[in-house]
Length: 263
Length: 341
Ligand SMILES: Nc1ncnc2c1ncn2[C@@H]1O[C@H](COP(=O)(O)OP(=O)(O)OP(=O)(O)O)[C@@H](O)[C@H]1O
Ligand SMILES: [Mg+2]
Image (cartoon, rainbow over all chains, first blue to last red; front, side, top):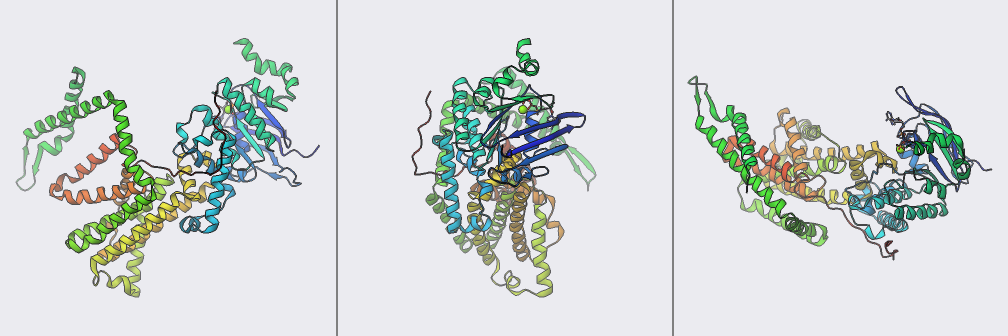
């Protein structure tokens, strides 16, 4: 098998006395949709934060290998913007849009790391800058169209309904041209219809050639989308495998699904 | 109308204000005669005044919530007129050209005192526009802004003193105020132009995104430190240039000209005008600089009035005089219709 595009080994994160991540191993291959599940407080979001440079992990290694490339780069110690430049983009569990900017501008921000214009370009608006701006606008519109928000392009982001805000987060991340997309609970707060649209959207994004790592509590969505599933509890990996294997794994049922049985 | 509860609250608020203004309004110390006079009648005026203002505000507010829907529509209408003017480049430039014409004609027809006041106002417009990049757009609190203003002024002063740099040196004596006024005016136009372009550029968007959410901004691939530094540097650049103009205009500078109060006033200009709005900053500067100047008649109370205006602004228009508008973009391509359920 080819080298995984993302290979994480022994990832550990301590907050004072709390060990939020405990020697976690995980890998994602090109073209895969991988789900990361676990009960509340298991450390899933912390894992994303370590990956994207928001937290600096206490120990462990994060290796990124762009598809078709033979060279791996370590993400450890990189700043969030450098991680994004390397081809990893994410959405946030608690929506973090730029609420005073328009929907389109939110996506245009995602193009920042792939474009160059600076002070002089902004002031003199030379041909190269104008072309670049045009490309940013057109590409952002195309991405909005993909997530079904093109008709709302000039609305303020804060005025969008909840489900649309979640899709806008995905659009903004896509604009950075990631080969690996990290989604933190993209279906949270969505109604069944919206979740179904999201299911379709994520499959489309996958077909377009993006690999996806997804945190999600909606089991129906996880089972429908994932090629493989990783399960964690108390910062530790407790299981990994195909959806069918996870569904019947006793450790998972005890840690995760057991919650529902008790409730 | 007002109920018993509001009236009771009004009385309490009045009492509180009488207490607060007691040292200012009632006690009068005459250091020469060494006597203290008590002007009790003033406390009655304060009480009545406060009570009336309180009731008027309450009634207006009740009225507002009563006709909320109508009011909201009217407000939108009102907003949209100024916003429409600002949104259409043609009308905006006409407006700016009109202001320009007035400004150029101004020194011709007015006293040198008036020109002097206007020059000061213009300086603050440019200072405000510079700080607007740092505070309004990038959302960074910059209380040391005046330091760069001082650097500009001292640079000019020292160069002038030691090397006798000619051009600016003769300006205050020869061409005088009108010349400085004209140069400043031109400079303000250039500043407006540049800030306007920056606002809708890749860099300007990054600043605004940084103001909105730093973490999301970094996660979208924006280098936080570099982007902030550029905002600081650009803001400082304008402060420095106005410092030069200031030194040339007054021909005398000392550290007392560059106090924290100065920074605070420039900050107030940006906040009053509406963070990130160019027209707002111009309005803010004109109001904050011209108002105290023309309120000189009320000399002792002008700082009080100044404060009251700022407080009223925070209460009634916390987002500033002119709320921000964002540029809209269009594409000629055909898009899928929205999903219908
Ligand atoms: N910055 C921080 N400082 C201290 N503790 C933290 C910090 N961030 C997370 N934690 C702790 O780490 C643990 C894991 O939290 P995390 O948010 O990663 O869980 P999660 O799996 O994403 O949960 P959920 O499903 O509710 O989103 C929690 O106990 C949390 O309190
Ligand atoms: Mg989480």
